[in-house]
Amino acid sequence: MTALQKLIARRIAAAGPISLAGYMTDCLMHPVHGYYQKERVFGKDGDFITAPEVSQMFGEMLGLWVADRWTTMGSPSQFHLVELGPGRGTLMADMLRAASKVPGFEAAVQIHFIESSQQLRSLQREKVPFASWHDDLSSLPKGPAIFVANEFFDALPIHQFEKRDGLWFERCVGAESDRLAFTLAQPGAQFGLTPEHLRTAPNGSILEVCPAALTYCTCIAEHIALHSGAALIIDYGYAKSAPGDTLQALKNHRYCDPFEEPGAADLTAHVAFDRLADVASGFTVTASPIAEQGQFLMALGLGMRAQQLAAETDEAGQACILSELKRLTAPDEMGSLFKVLALQHKSMSPIPGFS
Ligand code: SAH
Image 1 (tube, rainbow, N blue to C red):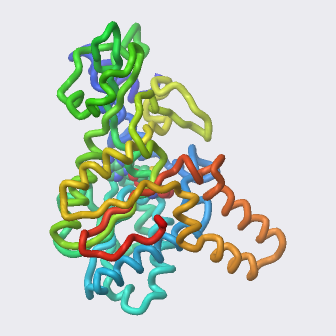
Image 2: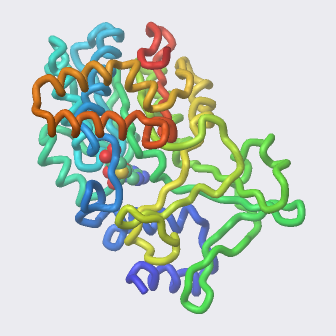
Image 3: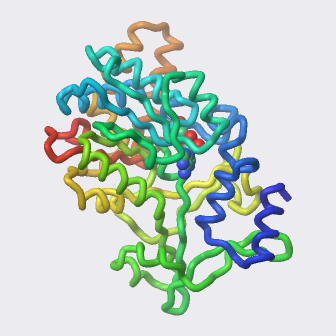
């Protein structure tokens, strides 16, 4: 039994089952035992590899996208580049290297990181020492801003609801003789966030909602509408919401039981991209179509960048670049499962990468 498992079991014994969102928050964010406080989360010797850790080309493409949007915004002399969930800081370092080739960009950019983990903040500080750190978007200064989030939204806590005998219940976390397990309870207020057309799903169906994702997306859209700017959200998930249980626990590159070792495994869920686009539509903001990562990166010129890098290296290096390209874009790797949604102020010209 992990220390966190004991704490959660004790809390459930004292006050009853907790929501899945509460459980995920404890597992990922607990200040001592939470998953993101672990030493090695990403990379080959961690639990999973993200696109920026696969290849520098990912960040370079995103950096050029950011520089292009900054130019379209009229190249403001100061603007905020905000990354949500920056992990090891690799993506920001790669984006800045590419975007700084655009005259005036480096002098204008002010870096902000939204990061809850102190452990990761110190890694990020090594790569991007001149950034400012925030717990959430509430402390972000006013002014034009470009937001980037890669594999951030999938880490936000979800609620799940299950239909039994024609009625919806909330899947909460309870304890059975010291083992944590799902238990059904009356649905909480968050059930109101489930899309109405999905509530007619058959018995046994599971619906998911992520209030934190909707809140973050609303705050981003509000900021863009008020101060101008753009956002790029990349994650794995649905282009169109559907019933299904997408909660997954990952440890050492393997799926495991989400209740097995709370705090030791990464917990994530699919992002409902259509819901994010919906909440943004209430503002003076244009949402892009929802693209697949492979198509998006190729439309931005990833193929050409790979060729350029390959021309500068030997045969072994070329094989490596080819395998990175495939990993990022092939439909059976990250190319199709990962989706991209962009938002920008309504006044701006068409969003690159979605043709
Ligand atoms: N974007 C990085 C890392 C993705 S992992 C990459 O692509 O490699 C998720 C990141 O989001 C981690 O940095 C984690 O600490 C952070 N994070 C997760 N939930 C968060 C929350 N609610 N608030 C702030 N940061 C969070």
